[in-house]
Amino acid sequence: MGVTTLRLHDGMFQANRRLLVRNGELSATAFRYASGVAGLEIDNGVGRIVLLPFQGQQIWDAEFLNRRLTMETWFDQPLPTRDYLATYGAFFLHCGGTAMGNPGPEDDHPLHGELPNMPYEIAELHFGSDEMGDWVELTGIGRERRAFSHHFEMRPRLRLRAGATEIEVSFDVENKAGSVLPFFYLGHINFRPVGGARIVDSLTDDRCQIVLRKPDLLDDTPAEIRAWHEALAADPSLHRRIGHAERVEPEMVMTLRPPAGADGWAEAQQQHPDGSADFVRHRPDELPFSIRWITRSSDRQAIGFSLPASAPPDGRNAGLTNGQAIMIAPRATFGARMRFGCKGAQ
Image (tube, one colour):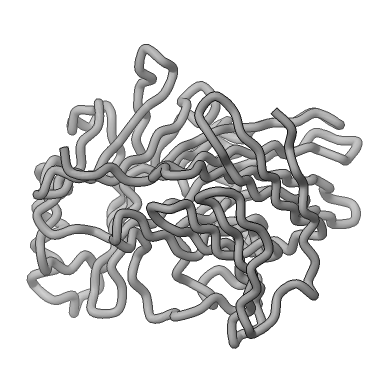
């Protein structure tokens, strides 16, 4: 089947919403947030996603089957900055580049590297169809260049099919420099926790399969928060039960090594009490780690029950020391795939 391409440019995005394309159940509408960030809403008949085509090619928001999937924060719109914590609320972000995760004592890189809010010089919408029906895909090119250091090109692809509640994401990164590029990646997928839900995957909760990061608790940490973290350290399986009003401060971070299923994919779910579920699937042969992240307070509600990753989120130096960087040769590429979304009640 043929593919129709629409090159996006900044002038398409105004305060007033503008329908760009309609193809059956699929539609693409351009608008601009009050902050000045360009937004692109894709509707597929059963839900919608809001993309930032020129800022990280993020999914800022996602809603399917009349339910918002995106984590809660106090940011009601994206802001035009590369500072990770200064525009914090997206449903999905590409993270990494020359580093990923929290900078360690010997690191000088920004939180989660260069990718999350990377500016994109080229952004395109592709419309097509295959044996599974109609689809629309956002793609583009973002470049990261630093003299005497590194030069790479990020080319993500985000596909949504008509009537589907699954988002298909992939990317290729090319090392454009003449020296080897140590590369790190994490797909930050930020769902909203559902009270009474349970996290389900193919792992057991023994310490051979999970590594729980010990949080830094201050002397004045409230007793209920201290008790939650202490209970989890004694029995890691407790994190699988999502409470209705529990506080998880500071954040909970686990590093997992999920095995691939017979089809080569690993899957994790947040199974809701009504029988519906959120899910993430990725290929461990491409991204061998899965990071599990929970933060819950009066200001934010977020659960990343499976963040596909190339390494634990401990910063550049730790990744290099532990041999966990992806070493991309000059002019070579690295890529990975993931799928995530929700399922209705059975």
